[in-house]
Image 1 (tube, rainbow, N blue to C red):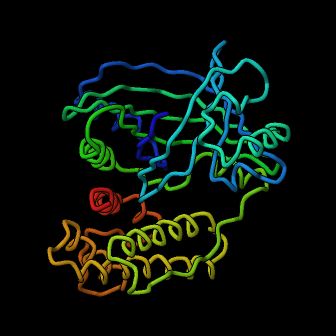
Image 2: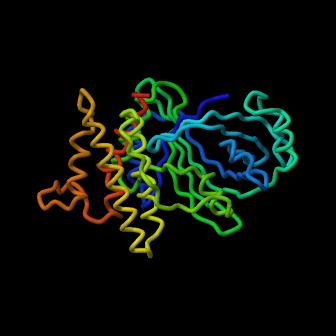
Image 3: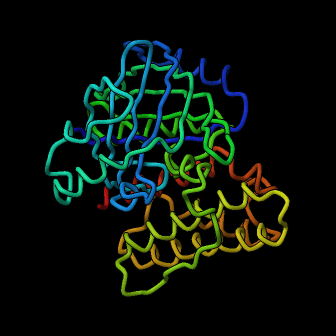
Length: 322
């Protein structure tokens, strides 16, 4: 078992030159590229998803490996999930190859095994660099391809930073340098989440209510605010033709930011992101005297390096506060 700790970015513009310039300034221990094919499995009643597990077979040339990812945590764009890998030779995963203790009962595992079917697939070119930075080893992967389900397909264009060894501080530091190249935004959704939706098996993105109870401790409230903010950023982006929904999503996004700022004010020491968040909130309130560092249009704002770095800084603070 290993715990996968990674930061995911969605790529929204041509970053080839800027990324090459950044990589040229870093110590690269290894680089390669592979064409990867992945098939994701579940039962018709989504038994694995109900257990918050994701199951796939990944193939590359003659190599095949099955992976199961268990319940984890997403804070900002930081994904942390236990995962287990095992060789596979057939068309279906073999659940008994994974440790017994990850299953509620072995009877339930065996029942799931009998019902497994392919639900969707992802196919992409992965370019990979192994980077040494700040006494850590970090894998940078650039995935470009598509997710295909029964109800359509969508493109994959993602950068992932995965911590292989060392401290998460190095991971966040490299992520901030990456954010500065522009054209990126933090990704809270996994390929599997997007795939379930394309297979007609996941709920479409929708407006969510925000839990603002003061009973929740400050860190949990800030995490909830950041999740609410990013959820409605994605909702805004996915609905370009629905002006009313966009207005509602933008208002909800601002609610998440307001919650973060209000609860952070309760802390004895100011957070490292306090002034930047206050500046952004002022801008979103359309104050005539707001800081002009922030772009006017949401499409530009969501890709602004300062905006992405702000989300990263909050996520880093939450990670270390946990």
